[in-house]
Every structure is written in structure tokens, then in C-alpha cells.
Image 1 (cartoon, rainbow, N blue to C red):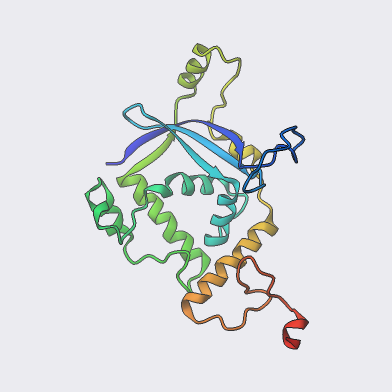
Image 2 (cartoon, rainbow, N blue to C red):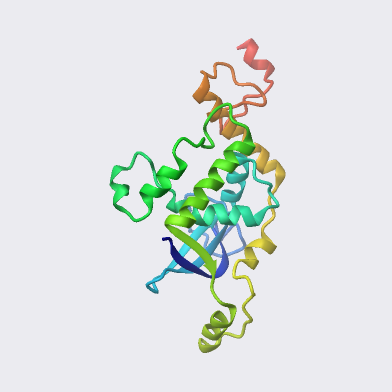
Length: 224
């Protein structure tokens, strides 16, 4: 029997950025990375009342689309996948078998292809991953929205002048828009790694290139 975790809220944040570049006055601030990537914080509560925050970078949606062929506009599927993925057990982790529901999930999903399995259609990869998610929801953890009236009562008690949405994930669904070019670029990376598992990638092409490179039609490569 899976535990039921309740979803309370979704709040938008961002990754490390330079406040000086963003218009601030901290000229001496040093940051290792300048990105300000959108990051969603999903507030959820487990059955014993312990609160948790699940941080989801915007790029996570792009990667799942690239890996499994999910429609970039299908936020319902993307949310269902990403919210439950942390409970997909690693078949190589023997110690995980002591946790409730792990053996059942592994048994039901044994032999299913992953996003890295070569020569498998996107539809089969996605079906396999959704089967893992359903097994997790059946045997380990299922995420459900907390009652709106209950959430509103807590907000009112805290003295916050706001009206909570019927769906606590509404901010994610209404504000998230995926750039098809970024999804396509991530798909090139996925396909490169996938191809490397089935055969040595001796000569990258314009459509199959290593990440962090520009191994396209480069005339100077032949000269060199």
C-alpha cells in the first residue's frame, strides 16, 4: 500500500545569478554560475505531518521531453512523472529492498526499457517509464492535492491576504512554457549518449554531436 503525500503549494524561484548583472548594487559579489534558471518549489506533506519541498529546475521538463518524447505542452504528464520519479528504486541497490514497496516495484517493472536503451521507439520508452510511475504510485508513494478549503484555512490563519487555487500546481501549469528549440537541443544530447551505448561514435555529425561542443559541418576539420 502506497503512502499518500499531499501537495500544498507551488512557488517559483531561480538559480544562482549575479545581482550586479540583474541590476543590483553588490559589485563585489562573486557567483560560480550566472543562470537565474526558473526553479519550482513544490510543497508537500507526508502522512506523519512532516513537510518537504521538492525543487524542480525548469530544465527538468525539457530533459523528460527529450528522453521520453513527452509532448512539451503536456504538463500533467510531466508533473506526474517528475513528482514520483524519486521513488523509482535502483535495481542495483540491494539495500533498497528493505524499504516498503521496493521489491514490488522492481518485480513489476523488470526488463522495461529505459531512456538510454538503444533501438526503442519513443512511445515504448514513455510507456515503460509511465509503468514505473504507476508502480511507484501503487506500492510506494502517491501525490495528491490537499483539500482547497483546508489549505485556505491555513493561509487565513497565517494572516496572508491570498486566495489559494483549486489546484495547488496551477502556477506550474499556467506559467511553464517549454521552448521547442531547447527541447530539440537536449534531444541531440540524449541521442548522442544513446548511440554511444550501441556502437562507438567515431565521427559525430551535425545531428549527432557530443554535448558542450559544436561538432557540425566544420570545413576546417578536414583541413586540420
